[in-house]
Length: 583
Image (cartoon, rainbow, N blue to C red; front, side, top):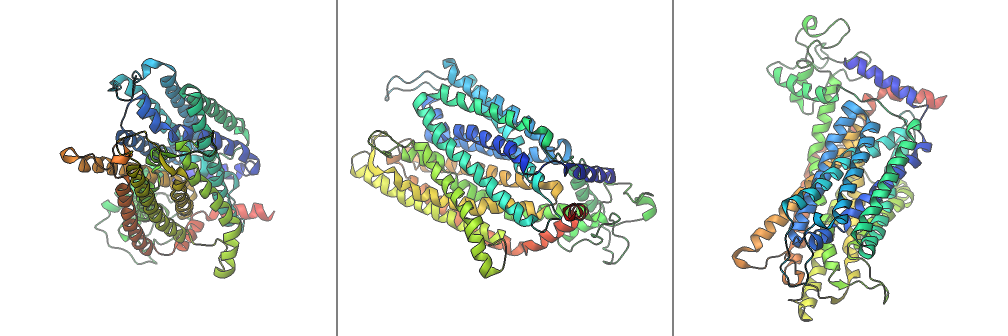
């Protein structure tokens, strides 16, 4: 069965090469751009929608958004497995696009119909009516649908774009793919910039009905663009044995745990004919027992296939599972940075209490300060790919500049600095508010320019540019092509875990600091709280995480070793691609 699946994938890829290429990029990129503009535009200003329309306090609203972000980032791992093992990337993206559109429509309905929300507060001092269970359920249902949609789009879109361009036999393939990853991320950054500025401004000026209606229209356009290019796409078949084979390796290793390891040159190791993987690697050695042949007559059939896959796995399957397991420690270091740099909710609340005037008649929207994070990320990607890499190449003799692990580590270090700067700026803002007599005035505007918030956003953007892109490319380079969507989904999973950690931190901080009737660190009135202590806590967590990363990176070893193994796994495809390229 495994052999048949492999043959089908190879045949599909040969046919696929008549399609794909740069001509498919407008459709794929357009789908991603419109999806991001519509989706991110909803996230950016949502804290004010929850506080003003559903009467949630700032801490509870932040927890709801962190949990929504967590679900949005957890579901892509399911979408990745569904894509790689069953349906293929095109179908999963298509279904995700439709479900996300439905979610946006439901959210739009909560803005259209007044009964979908609690009644407005008549005066600032009035005790507001809380949202009832039905109203909250409708809101959360919209969040759920959008999260499910993102679970289909996010893990597959990048890998689907890579499918259209990747040519393993081309000597310039690695450089091409790095440029693709960087510019894909930059394109997404530009769309998020437009979303954070334009969509937030539209919601503030035209209201929630128009502000949530426009994203519905953009998402509809996103779906239309994606389906228009359907006939041009490379659509690789799913590897139906992926999920079961990974589970089979674990079970087989446990069943064979009492067997002795044969010599490296023994014929007891099970592998496919033509494969260069004829002996397993010594790393995670306990899994090697999954590919030990007990008895050739009873374990292997006449076609060279395992009769009992739950008792015997190929060396390649064992090594694939090893590759995934070995990534987990480095993957886990992305959790804390995700929790620390994605603090746009509280940053927006800070900006709302500061002088945001650009001109005498125009104020920069409070949630739109996140645009400086995206702009920094986008600018850095362009500079790094076009200027920094060539300069570094002259000194390091490496065409890719910094190694992927170096980029991730530098990003982690900068994220610590970003949180520390956030703490210092908030300390200055709070002290000035108290000095101006605004300690008990929640809506009071401090005589301090909101542009002081820009440095922390720029540092967060630089940290994300180095760490996030480095993570995605690192995962993609260390796993076989059949697991490409899973490689991308690992990054999303880390972001989801980071959102959960962030929600947990907010919950614990609020509960701990409000004991005995105290105001606490995170009240609705920022001037009475200590958001600077909260940012300082995040910075200290970031430092501990950076030290943990150094340990994980040292234990992982040379990333080139993983890349070389991937090249061996995909050797057949590479040979075919090289022949096509030479022709």
